[in-house]
Image (cartoon, rainbow, N blue to C red):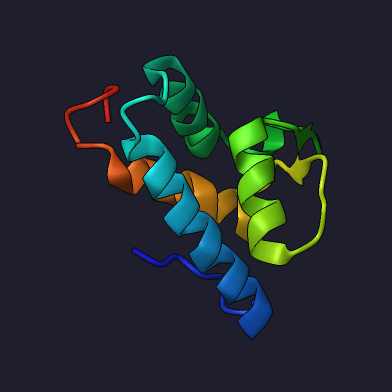
Length: 103
């Protein structure tokens, strides 16, 4: 389910949507290690204060943002107000059954 910030632009909403789709597809891929899916879920559940303005270079997330934005990125801000991060994390979380990974 789309979870936009009210002040996001149309391009930010588009980035969220593309990353959401990519996160869901990645999580549902049988070749994706369950530990990696759990890692993203843990990031999604973490409070932004725990990140201290960190950048994440997790390859599936970076690839999703690069593909969605058309800009070659090497890391993504670890913040829930970042549409790429939040879209990918929400897509992963929504693709995984509620009884998996302690959700």
